[in-house]
Image (cartoon, rainbow, N blue to C red; front, top):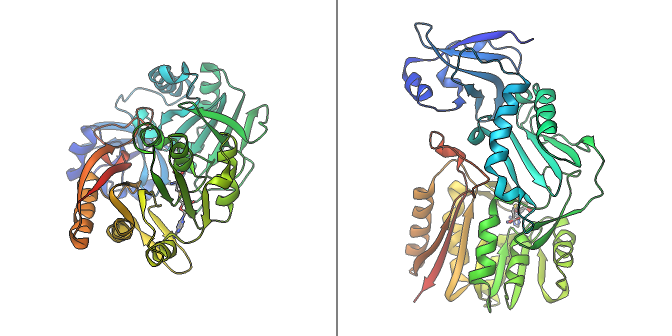
Length: 398
Ligand code: SAH
């Protein structure tokens, strides 16, 4: 069905790809012009035409495609995908068997052997996210493989690959019986209302599961909590259930108010007792300083990049300043949860931002907790940039 194209790997990239690096980057290939159709199977070879790996062509911000196998004779077909999915599903057995948690990642891209594809599970519903036209080309084989391996109520998909690498708006239904949204999923006993048919975001970011549980079980009790960039208020719900005196959620998106009220409601928490503020976080910080408000816990979970009317925020450039704003309104012995999903820097550099922010404010701190991606977001050591999540709990000390 597919014609194969040989891609010549430049000498200085050969060892990296031989060693298991899964991303086919543009600068590693000398004959990029031979690529025409996304979904083409590519054979990576060195300058003497010796086989290195097999993969597919699919343009993603990260590169030209992904390595799928180091076996020259394997065909990329339904049985191939079935094997990859089967292994991933087996590794999530404890999640499938849990009645406490019914939302998790079943397949995590290159971590599970197929870059450009993730599959999430939401109480019987499967959500596939395609990150390039190239991987979408294999959708029939992949979906059939999945359908043969699991019980499913319905399958939904998100396409995140139009010209700008953005989400393509559709109702996202693929097969089965259409869900009635929201569906209610559970995470460590807590309910979440989830919508698979609306936007690129479904209501909850599953990668913060362990962080939410830790906030509820070990930090929230008796504390006032400010949750910034709060989206649907997932951290606030866990904090409230963990005994927080009061939560305040701040997000500039209008939808965040009704979405947050809904998440409180499905957990039988009266949203009237909590603060929900639709406002630019940076504006709110100024207000809080002026009113001399302080919080026992401040959660920072900004997007890697965001533009609001007044501010442009880039995690790499501005995280230090964000921390300084948070430090100013954190009570003595209070906790700051500093989180970022920015993949352009690692934990070391992130801790550097933290150290600089405290130094410049003349305050002291202690790191009390650290997180990266949870087990279901499987990553491989050959591709450390795939482990994008960095969360550090800091205690402000006197
Ligand atoms: N912390 C959330 C996820 C955050 S998603 C959770 O755990 O679910 C990023 C959110 O930041 C979006 O909801 C977006 O509306 C919001 N946002 C982006 N820039 C902002 C700003 N300057 N002030 C307030 N909210 C902002």
